[in-house]
Image (cartoon, rainbow over all chains, first blue to last red; front, side):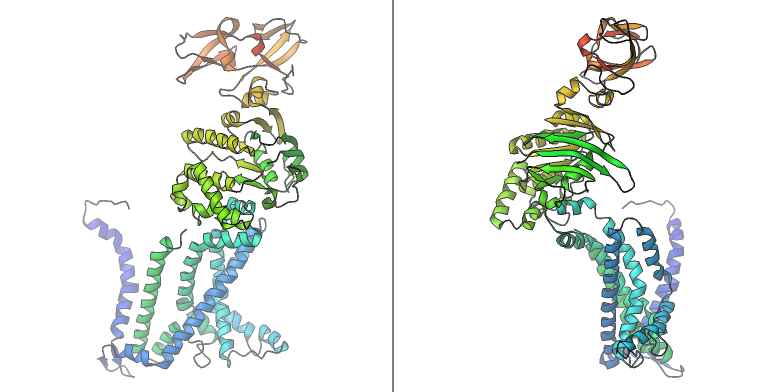
Length: 292
Length: 347
């Protein structure tokens, strides 16, 4: 690391000030507020606020709805991550084999990323709409009665597809870059070394793609857990019967719809801890463990 | 062990670019053949067609007695050393060496024996459990060689394997590769753009230019009797002087100077080739204005001008120099080429 020595004691602080200010105003302050609120209980009309210590947290662990939301989030995140990364990897491998038309195809595949999450949610909601949706219609003709308003499994499938669809573009770009950074001579050497196409792919590509994969894994988990609020809000609103009520959506529902600010704040502090943990994992291990 | 025969092999790329044109060459069993030429001459393409990494547009490649055109690289019984070594970065040196054997279901004790033997030959034993990134360039190069020799293939193919090494290591490694090849007696084809590497390593030197063979043969024969002006200028450092000259009445003239007498050739323009080291001071020949001097230590290279034409002369390091220098060359060291086709006239 290169160090610059400033003669003036004030200058470095001035240079840092804009960023520190933004971090303080938009992160430290609200985060601090959340932490503080998580120790408080407010009455339903907002007239009185009492300090209740850890009560909001202990109440969470005793709340079956909250624990159910944890499970829902787990299923949702794993499903979105696997679907988004798997699809992206298959598409990226296909493009990597292509030499011409590759750039056109890449451009087209990146478009969904430019679609706002809420719009993406609406798009899929329309397609799967039990009354007017084309996909719901197709499934009905195939004998499956799709209804994500009533069926928890259908609802989960819908939000997973809508959330994963948007993330495929992003994963795809990284996978393509990762694949293209594997020198062709490695695959050629493996071909000469007697590895068939399938063995060549599985012994050479995944290990060399591991750093990219690990990075995307963390990014996708973070995306699925925290950035999918608009998708949920636009499609199922957490329903039916809390079946798609992921943690982030529950924070919003309990806080802004249910007006249980203390519990909502405690939930967001838990989420914050999860994000921090994931970030630490990413920074600590992405460079060391997975790199070959 | 097997000879390699290439019969009228061509490569035309999809865009219609023809990289190799009707190349035929025979490489005897156990020989060290070097394909040399400037970049874009088709030497790597030819090697990759032999390896099976590039489809052959037309012609036949035979390794041993088998026509291999339609065989996969794995089935051609060859091993290749790549310019960037192409070591598998996620495998240890030992795994790198054994990968090809494991793919071929070689018994475990046989793999261990061969890996150990290769490690002993190449002195990479201490690194067997390291990953390639923990090795220096020279060590990686050895591992790449090791991966080729554990396979005990019919032929080694080298694609500019030394060009990523520094100059000193390159000289050392080229001697090692050559010794190793002698010891194993495996037919080898070596691609390089470095004429010095080519000269020093080749049993059989093949000079390629523009997708065709300019000349093939023993390195010294090519050096002594280049078939074309291209070969004359490409093989040898400093390159052969190529001077516009003419024959008039049996005399060879460069400008107004008479270089040789009694040339049995019809009158007309010729290209005269003289190696810098064949020019000796004194006598009548070329009258040079000394332009500048490169001190090489063991010798000095004098760049001079004879009536506007550039001439390089190699002189002993202590040779006293004035502003002018008269040089001449023995008659049997003069090479005459057709200025239109570039072909040797007394071939």
